[in-house]
Image 1 (spheres, rainbow, N blue to C red):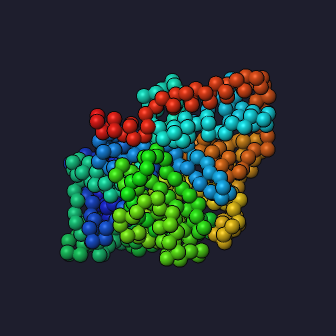
Image 2: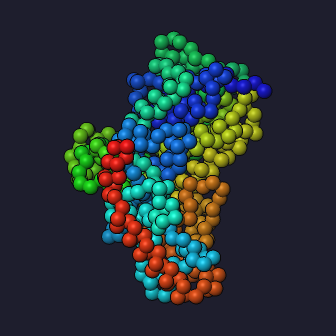
Image 3: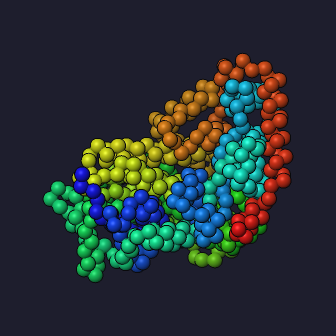
Length: 497
């Protein structure tokens, strides 16, 4: 074995400093030195970010106090995403985190709910989701402190300020021995076998290492420009290719969820933070100019901008290889799906989780590289399929954009999921997937995709038992949520310690 003695991370931002933080927790600086090279001249995108529940678990694994993190990053709690006007212009639905209902007898809750609906029970699926009910009432409580209660199966994520997260992670990593160097990489030197040997900075300084992590954003300086790894383009599946973002004043109640509202050529987001609100418009340049997108955004804001809106172009897809030779790509350098389901930070963390799982020595055994690339490809495709579902299942045809969405060619994997679900509500689930049954059920239901029948095994249950269980569960969740603190009250209690 020839252990790695030095790792150089090229690029900062969320991806660079999250990689540095995770490496610093697992590698002793006297055994493997970690150095991050970044240029303040290049800057970072830095908008309000929304996360998914595994991010909270990552914070805990890093030994970071959640209350301290929330205060330092202007964070708020997130119980899910409210989708407005996606299926039809007049409707909305909620994608909650955590469970929806509990098994009745030995039967799946969702299947029992399907049978009840066929018997005339019009209770919405969301009424059995603790997160949905809390979100509707603007309330929050830690599920971990309410185990064995009607809201014990809830889950949550965070809304954060991306720049403050980067600052926090940098402090964390540097305290654990990570060295930061200010500088812009202008040249990359390779060995005869194609491995990267060193990077040269604008000031003439050279940084050699055994392994390199590319966090240079869409430039993909190492993985793309140097190693020549091409990107797989997903433009035929995902219509949007630009975003315009701004910060606004905080106005009204502090809602514990993200709002995604369908617009004529895309969708707008609203991410509430403690001191301000992140708002923006994700759109297709094929159906809206930057000027038209800016006008749409400004028209839909619920408070005034505190900065000039910025246009952020992007491409969707991922590198054919995330890891090649002694170079790993993370963040935008590795690929980008789109921000609809807040998976960007999650995919960075997953990239590092798998890297630590298949951690190499200096030779970078090809078997480790192949398995890493296989797992990351699977993660990206899972996220892609889930997001495509939101567009392709629309019933809207009121603008050219939504007409285009109705014609999206479904990836085979998504088409098979839909066909399986329509059969009797069955779900295809892989190993360690991000989106579990409750997520797929919520979006299928919200987008008008419903099973033709329920699972035949449910017939073994007496319907009276199902009806009684549903009535009791709904009342229990509603009763408990009514007595929980508001989201703002809970945040105040966290700040007070």
